[in-house]
Image (cartoon, rainbow, N blue to C red; front, top):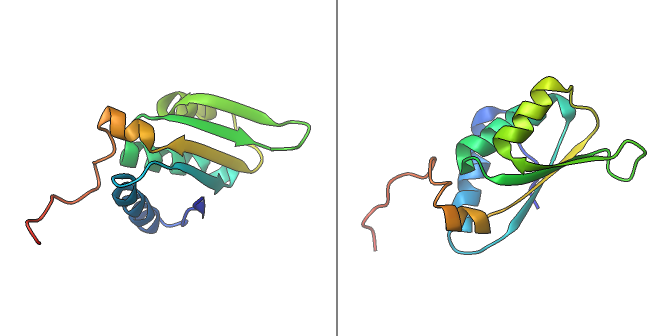
Length: 115
C-alpha cells in the first residue's frame, strides 16, 4: 500500500521508480489513494511509469455514489477527461501484469556491471 503519492511530479516519479525496482523481485498489488483534483496527474504518472496496464479506480467507497471503473489506464484517463472526477479515489493494480507484458521499465536506469 502506497497511500497518497507525493504531490510534486519529481517526488511522485521517484516513488514509482522505487516500486519498479521492487516489482522485479516480487509480485504485489499496489493500492494508492488520491484526491479528485490530482487523479488525472496520478493516472498519467502511472501510465508513464508502468505503461498502459490494467487498473481499478474506485471513488466514494462505502457511500451512496460509490463508483468503480476497471480497464486500461488510457481508458480510465479518457473517462475522467469527459466526466469530472469527484470524491476520494482508490487505485489498484498488480505488478504481476508488468512482468508478463514486459512494460514498466521506462524510468529505470540502464543496468550496471557492479558486483
